[in-house]
Amino acid sequence: MSENRATLRDVARLAKVSSATVSRVANGNPQVDPEIQSAVYAAAKELGIDLTDTRKNRTIAFVLGNRDRVNEFQSRILLGAEGYCAQHNWDLQFISFRGDLSAPPANLRLPEALTRPNRVSGVILSGTHSVGILSALREKRIPFSVVGNNIVGEWRPEEFDCVSTDDVRGSAEVTQHLISQGHRSIWFIGNQRLPWFARCAQGYSQTMKEAGLEPHFSEIRSEDRELGYLAIKSLLASGERPTALFAGTDEVASGVYQALQESGILIPDDISVAGFNDTLGELLHPGLTTAREFPKELGGHLAEFTLRRIQEPGLPPQQLTIPTELVRRESVRRLEFAPTSARIPVHAKCVVAPRLCLREHPFKPKLRTRKSCSCCDAPVIFSLRKWSPRADSWESLLYSWLVARKEILHRRQRQPRLRKYRRFA
Image 1 (cartoon, rainbow, N blue to C red):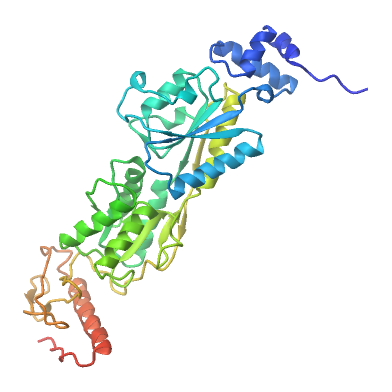
Image 2 (cartoon, rainbow, N blue to C red; image 1 turned 45 degrees about the vertical axis):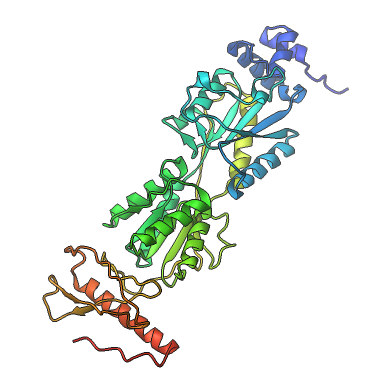
């Protein structure tokens, strides 16, 4: 004879509540007292009953906040969450949400799917959100999980069900890789008003300072591909010529690629480029060196945290940080000699170093420049930084001399009829 299976009445008897109360708890009614709700779930767990199996609305909302489109990274998070929900017989509803990031919780208007009587059972927050929506969801007692990298404002991640990518350490690894390849003039391209760029900039800045190098940041207030394109156009117009660029996302790196190609600058021969998140790294040419994130796994853990919160409301906050992986591709080259901070003069289509008088004292160099470019006879625009003790070293002078010599020898091989290069005095 088979054992009798426990029912909702048994749960009610063990929790010392009515069957109607158990039914309301099972359907996620927010008006049930939290202590009673916890007692009912504890009794159900003791009897081996999953109350969510009897829930009428088995739907979780994936709320993408303040985004104009679903980019590659967000789409992979969505796929990971949808896959986990399907495995556990739950539905996933996609909601695009726009809200004022500075509005207090009382003035924040939530999507209708989260406020109607037959509302969704839980929420996954992705995209860009404010601290206000966290408070609003907690006030309405809606179970939710959140991507910890994308919250604007001061908040305490340890108080919420949160899944994050370790982008600070990941960006530090990318920066360290560029430094190990001999690069010293490295610029970070990203809008630090957005939290994920700010965290990447933090790892980049810390690593640069630990290496005794000065961090440099772009000042363009944009996002994704447009940010990379506009930042590089502005950088080149200012006369700056870094040896490497670190883009805060692969989407930004794609804009960097376009701007450099339009300017006739080769990757990685002239400038090395690195990205972050590895959503487009294999699609770009040359292949982009980047830090790989795992958005599909991130989405799966977000769905897992939300379902667990629905089933066990009394759990302590759930935390998970997913590491990154450095992926080396062809967009970064190794410099044979690493300049400290000296800058090479820049012409529209070629790079020509000034003639350096090495007979002078190395800490007081005498610079002599040509009136025209040695390869195309066009006027040369020189842009030199102020000399500093770090820059005025034999390493900087030797590097500039070697770069100029290598460039001219390279052009001689391609154009044998170029006029003979005058030797240094």
